[in-house]
Amino acid sequence: MTSAPLPANPDDLIILLAVARTGRYTSAAEHLGLNHTTVSRRITALENSLGGRAFSRAPGGWELTDLGRKAAAVAERIEESLAGLNRAPDEADQLTGVVRMSATDGFSAFVAAPAIARLQQDHPKLSVEIVTAARRASQHRPGLDFEVVVGRPQVNRARSIRLGSYVLGLYGSRDYLAKHGTPDTVRAAMNHPLVYFIDSMLQVDDLDAPRRLLPAMATALGSTNVFVHVEATRAGAGLGLLPCFMANQHPDLVRILPEELEERLGYWLVARPDSLRQPAVAAVVDVLRREARSREAELLGRTAHG
Image (cartoon, rainbow, N blue to C red; front, side, top):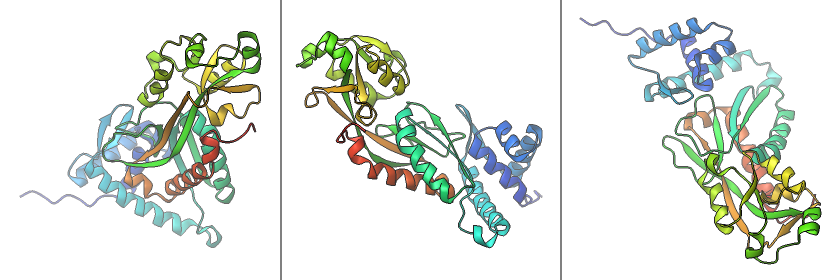
């Protein structure tokens, strides 16, 4: 006769939640003040209680299985209940914990950072970690609560939320244009060197699309970082394909052929439903949506130099 599995230990469920949020046993152990061996042993014990695997190996870390997601939902309710017991009456509505996200350089600096800073003024115990990257949405997001990507994501078991659009335009510095001339046609623009992403390292199809506007334009300086694009263009390395909301911050940059050379791209947020159920994550997502909406004109390049 097979004995019934033991009920899951609530402490082990909290450990599972830490592994799910960090994607790694070592990171979860550090966060919880335990050692790696203890975390591994407790996850094994939990899986024995659940009768199956809670995690599967994914690129970059560990991802919850279907069974693990069910356990994590229970763990979140336990965590929230414990947090409620420990809060003082005047802290009942305070957001706490760490939210981990990834986003592009430009979005992180001009949308996420100011929005999150304002949220933290009301919730000083909330911590947010931003990993900057220009990449397509991942099928697996170990260690991240959500991602902000360029282009509509094609992912499974995740919710996609459109945050808004932004525009790429072609820019040159005033000094560069005074020296080399301002192109008055697309053909003339292609005689100039380009500042943009490195073709061989570009992982986002939508960011590759603007190159079709200037198919014969040779790259003079490529980088994976859009801030490098802006500064290289300002320094006269060539004409830069730049987000208008970034380029328009600099009076020394001039937009070229805005009617002919414009590419509209979309920002999308990708998160697992279980992540969005966490109050802190939901609050950060909400402020990002509101910030992107309030800065629509700027993102679309309709504002003057700031």
